[in-house]
Amino acid sequence: MTIAYFDYRDGDTVLQAGIAFPAADGPAPAVLIAHQWAGRGEGEHKTAERLAELGYVGIAIDMFGKEVQGDPAGDNSHLIGPFLSDRAALLRRMRAAATFAASLDRVDGTKMAAIGYCFGGLCVLDLARGGADGVLGVVSLHGMLDGNDLSTDGPIAAKVLVEHGWQDPMAAPDKVLAFAEEMRDRGADWQLHAHGRAMHAFTNPHAAAPENGMAYDADADRRSWASVVAFLGELF
Image (cartoon, rainbow, N blue to C red):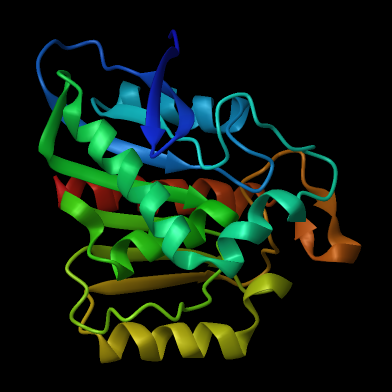
């Protein structure tokens, strides 16, 4: 399956999406894929292709800017740091992606979802927290769960699924509890699936640093994807 590349914008920043279209013609539900801290790459494109095989338009979005890439094996704090310190900017960038996706001829703009990995998990959760802009549901996979300080305390309309590695040091039990309380207080339709032996980045076959709390887990990868497929099927 071929990935097609499309440019779009958030203000003056040019961004690029990698898109996999389903075989069938006509508008189809779309799933945005928010990337991990190294930027959009092969992993997100493979996810887009898997989604296209299910009949969805898989859209690997861009948080950093066209041709801006981090080091998959290095420290990319400099790329995500500005968004962690300015969650309003993060939300604007996610909204730009949702607006772009809805504008595509092959997308049914009334049926959209967003999934995100690691940093991308935080991105899709913030989209839900901020009103979702037509996105019906979001999925965070080994994502950061930290709440934000934006003044949006009304009900969360988008359905929320969190696939969490219980041994993930980036989302320790106190953060999981705080997230659960936030979802309860905002009346969300939410689920959290904890994979007991899994660490951070459990869907990434290249993750192999258990001393830092990061490791691939084949069982958690398989089980979480099955949950994602079921969630999208219910959503659409």
